[in-house]
Length: 472
Ligand SMILES: Cc1cc2nc3c(=O)[nH]c(=O)nc-3n(C[C@H](O)[C@H](O)[C@H](O)COP(=O)(O)OP(=O)(O)OC[C@H]3O[C@@H](n4cnc5c(N)ncnc54)[C@H](O)[C@@H]3O)c2cc1C
Image (tube, rainbow, N blue to C red; front, side):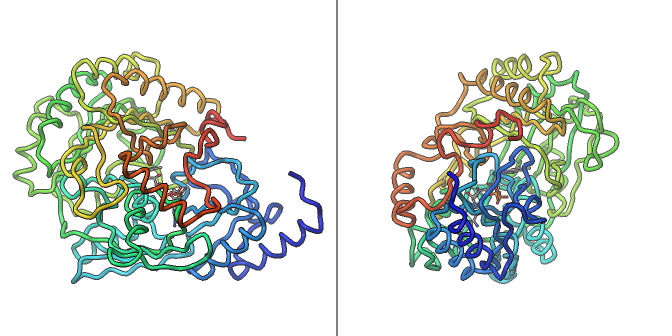
């Protein structure tokens, strides 16, 4: 819709005055840098990009947006931007990166983070005092965004989802009211923040538990791609029965020729099994014997500081074009592995950067001790088809190959989906248990009655479904 120019000028003036001037409007020199998220597949053009530094500035943004008939899309890093509507022309993109407060309480084993804090900062600061958080496989992912989605960590099979560690949140509701939610006050909002994916307000900060984890037995086992069959079959049997102190991720990996990966792997096609064992070296070595018995060509397993796990998965910190979509699997039978190899294995012609299988189960599949919208993730494995190629001409093909892989595994699929790793069109209701979905919708409707917030996975409008992998 074309806005008449006096109204447009008034709108610009009002937006320009927000956040002490930390605002970028279309045409401003910094607008392009401000609007581009971590995920470079997304090319949204919001009405404004704003950088509030504290909760009261968030309130001002929400009130101004409502007055001007705009919606609001909160965003931390943009790692989840592909799930978001790519047409943000009638929305304010509210970037939280200026809210960087980080406090570690060694005695209480807890942290408070502002909405702009990334996992890398928590890992470093908590690690320095012998503590660890349930961080994601990339240290660059936002703490608040990943906690809102659930958060499956290298430590989750023993300690549960990150969302289950959240003890308090500060939220700005759609009408601009700032509230602190705990188990005693505004308990519904805290419940929704534990895995409800947002949509009830802008979270400006949160408190969560840390754990005494100083060292782990961790590393990678690597084989050339022609060992894919034996490595995957052996790993699947081993992972199905492994104790909860073990977490592992198996990947068929077309390793990019980039500095983030060890030189010895660059440009190769390999099978990589990343493993973290929350134990000492002797027990760790005993536990992984069945995998060592199939002679990995590279073996980096050792006792390491827990903080080093942050880079074990070799993910890019820099903004990247990432298409990621997944399916939860109830089991990983020999037949399922045959299908994976036929669809994405070395002879399949698949153009995916990685075909990744994450081991779930243990505490991930049990209700967490703190109630939340997502208090567990079902299925024993999560299969992810990931495209990360810098060449835009490959993006549609990578999306197609990922969708083909997930469709082929449907006979083994769990009934639910893990939304933070399902970045294409998806039946959002399957992200939660039916009763949790109903309660979450009611909480969102009460906190945001006029639909101010742009939600991830709004039907048929996400970036992936609109662009089919191509930038607009
Ligand atoms: C490289 C990579 C590695 C990953 N590894 C893991 C992993 O190991 N385990 C796992 O479980 N997931 C993982 N993920 C998925 C990740 O947890 C989600 O993409 C998560 O949403 C990212 O949060 P973010 O704040 O960084 O991203 P953003 O795109 O900034 O945020 C995602 C969504 O969260 C909501 N949101 C963010 N901040 C706020 C706020 N302050 N207030 C209200 N709503 C907000 C918004 O709806 C936003 O669209 C990974 C993703 C990538 C790209």
